Image (cartoon, rainbow, N blue to C red; front, side):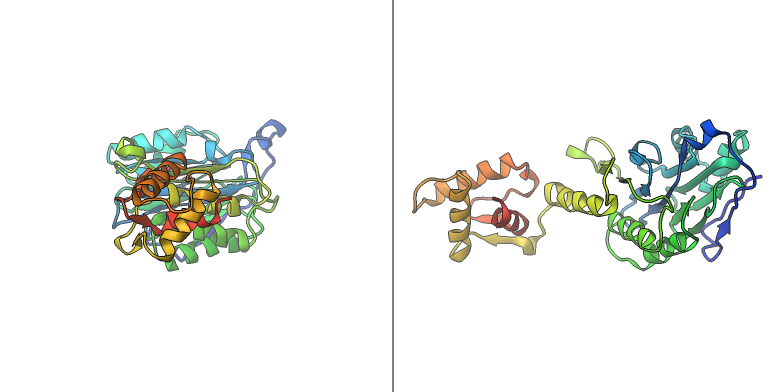
Length: 312
């Protein structure tokens, strides 16, 4: 039987206690994890954040397609739930209907766990009755959080509360929720990998695909901390300067830029001309892949300046 929670049941936590033993070969494939799927109604972004005591969880759990939906498939994960779920939603199925169809045709559904959000913001979560405890999920407005083999229900509750009370981009909300889940207990077996996937139409590199953010930590003692670090780099490399962060290269700023570029070997001489300084800064920016933040001659993005200060 399919147990789902819609966005109207945010206050309900379903706990499913394992009622039987899996065969040994099945137990090895359990993706014990906690995850959250979400939707941003302002930008249309859809995404998944996940952490697990499992190698390269980002290769298994998160699936998303712009203007369609997002899926997190875990426990004894059926990876076909990802592409099949997205195909169902692309044909107009809601998050709830998608989970019902996925699980109805799966003879091992009692060992599955899945969270889904559709492009209208509808959400649903499912936990099979034979998932290892603690296992369960919460579906609320524009998000669904779930986990299995957790220290307790507090992990899922913390993710839900944090997601709803965090402002900013979908990526920041998902990461904050994931971090809160870990702080509330997380995977009872420990930590190993994490991932963040956020999609938006034209959101990828050069606007040619939908992968606005696609970051994975495959094996690390502190995977969520490392995921935060990678996300900060992602913002630096692929973010765009805000008007208030474009500053003129003059006075002390000019001296600092020149000194830094000399230290790094991009500039020779003690008194470079504006043309020489600009050429050196341009070379630095393109070496570091900061083209998205490159400014006209005489100006610099504050984020590039801060990076230049710290570069050794």
